[in-house]
Image (cartoon, rainbow, N blue to C red; front, top):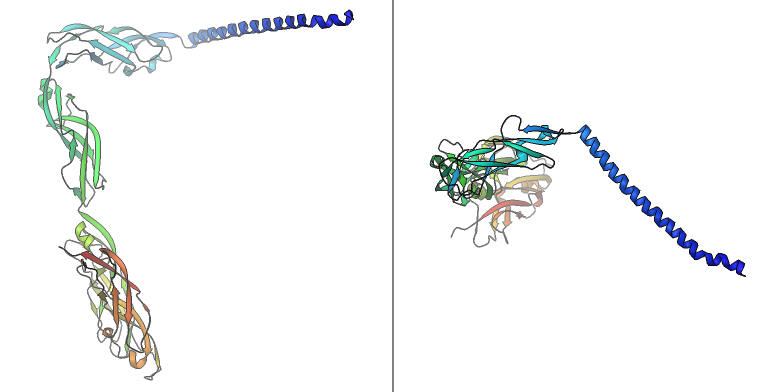
Length: 435
């Protein structure tokens, strides 16, 4: 029995030995990993020093130097012009050619200095680039002379650098915020400032309200910029822009008066162009009906086609891309059976409509002149004596509102005449009645 129990009793000891061996292996592995990492860094640094060693150099090598920033300046004083400086630095060889003056900050502390007599002050330079060490500055000190600043209040003006599109103008002077700024600096420069301006380009601006924010610039009377301090470096201008001229493309409607000779009919009415572009003052263009009319063409007693070039009617101070329209009224003899009781083909009549149910407070736009085409059919005896005045075309304006709108046409004809087709609606412009 004891022979079988001995291996069982030995298990806890064996387990402990395995755990100890595993822990020792893990500990040695961590040490090896740490040593490997340190060795890798060491190798990297060695390679970096070999391939990209640290070198000394001067920045900048040529051109403009590093500007000096004044700190702790007494209020009401400015510093006379100071020279630019260069620095001797230590950096990686690959970085040296790429170093610029902006990679450094040079300062001179003028605390307690308010005299116009030169005083030597130390120039301190720090690098803004990591890994770049400043060794020394050239020059290490500068002579600082303080000047009591002059100041004056100047209104802010808008300097317009672009023109508004054709047909637009400024409705009023722009509103500028702030309206005034205080300028300060060297007395001779402050005296030379003629204006403080906000440059605004209005090219292509068509908005009723336009806002622009930008930097302020102090300028002499000659237009040259002056280096002075401004109490506000930016401003906002708000413009009100009015559209003086505008354009509309409107249909052209012919006006035909009279009737052909007895036994003849109008078979077609054509005109060219059928639309025209109208340009003029916005108020005038907006008041136009939704169409343009031409001088009336009389066809009374016509037996053949009537062709004429008629001017497009328009109000003063309005221009058109086409001044006239060619209109053709085709007149043909009736082609019937030759008997008074025989039927005839459809006849085209041009009728001036009447208007009804005009809402209170509205009126037809000035110059409204419309014609409606009505195609009718009937017996020869009736059509041969039919006149345009025998046909009544009525446009109901019930429920109409101000502006251009399309309204239905109702046609009534003498007994025995049948309406075959024609204009079912017309476009009419209504204006409010002036109080």
